[in-house]
Image (cartoon, rainbow, N blue to C red; front, side):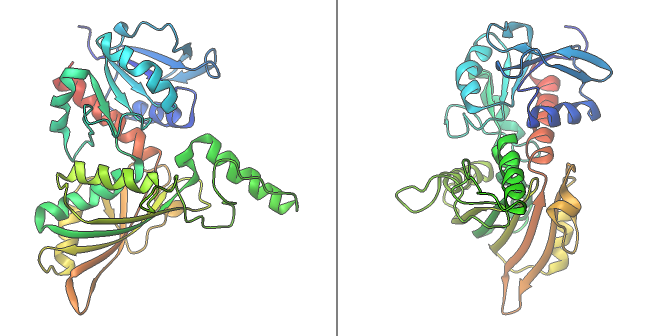
Length: 334
């Protein structure tokens, strides 16, 4: 095989695809061949990467046997239509669309947390990434779980509109423009006006009262932590922020810790950066780090830890993790 893998990216013209290409350009991963693909709306566009211009090919009809690894960073519909075909052609598929997250036959993988789960991809050739909010939450929970144990997790997840892709960014922008010009505000992606508002429903509400996003996040966290019985209570809402998810987290630890001990545990994780009160816009945007702040222990209950987590949902939550999985595949599996 030539030096480096052959890599295909489905969704190359989208917001997530652009971020993956930016992360790829800064990484040590240097494919000897790169195929940029998209659906009908993006096919034919020209994209520059590492000084070379590429014409985006239509995903329909592409021969995936030419790609050692294929990244799906477009819609769930495109993953549903083509991902299994790509795997059947012999390409390792990294799905970042969310389509396979709840599929028990597809390993859910987060680099730095459970890279060994990639062993299970040998059978199907498929790998699923967790949601961006799950990725930043588990990045903090895992080292604390290993160091002292966690007995309960309570989280408020405040989602940036880019979780819904470019369409989410466009809807927030158009609503803000409409409000400033005293025009009617239209909501299509979100259940209510999201501009200058907090919308306490992210996803469809199920019979239990929890939304689909909340249920998916709980299941993903338990899988990645290897703790299927861990009590996780989670509320997700939309904020009028373009990029950067923000999480308010309350943990019940298995044993008391001093705050200095908590800081020493977290500072050892390369992906985590501690601060006093990092904000999504001020610290996280365009960063591949998870920012943790507002650390405090309840004075009357030293096993109760409160903290604040922010990260760029596109750059850290998807692009960084996609590239790290591809690097592991190149080194150990392809």
